[in-house]
Image 1: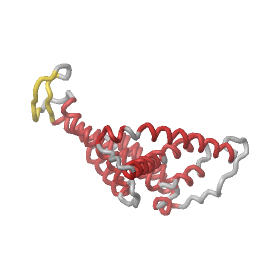
Image 2: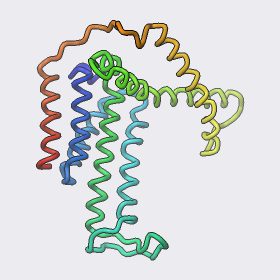
Image 3: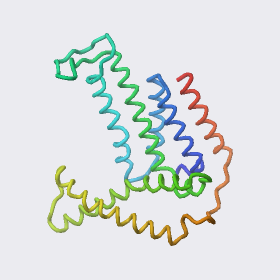
Image 4: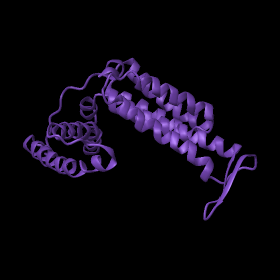
Length: 238
């Protein structure tokens, strides 16, 4: 994929993990905003039909957190807006401190979501799995789980098209909820077929074979070093 042309899959995964960890450690809104913007630019390089879905899944929860945090939070004394009294929750108000906390945590969530989006859309997961010298079972589980979302969406689109061909329109929440049962059944069948294919290819044996690993180049090592520096900066200064 595109990121593999710049750095190897393993170095790219380390760099994305470092960016996500830095966003979680940083305490300044501006620093996290810069990281989120950088990750957004990286994600926009992906030429995938699923790009909008992943971007929506990364950004919309952060926006929802930004709007809910000031209303449900109780911190700060500089009140900008005071709302009604609600049982259990108390007075719904918005303070300057709550807005700052909402922006920081919303940007953190968006940055982490964008890091996963870049991981899912830009990295070559086969190369990433092949480069794993330890915890190979965990790496395989992560790679398979990453591919689950686009596979489920492709199955859902196929079901919708099949129903339309029979004169049935899938509309609204109730209509899409009916797709859950066949999607779960298809996922279980696919899991069984995958397990049988892995067993037939000798997965889990003591002696394994693997494809040649691409050699690490200078920018691969530079990416890992940048990830470590970013995490340290997020812990100490950002």
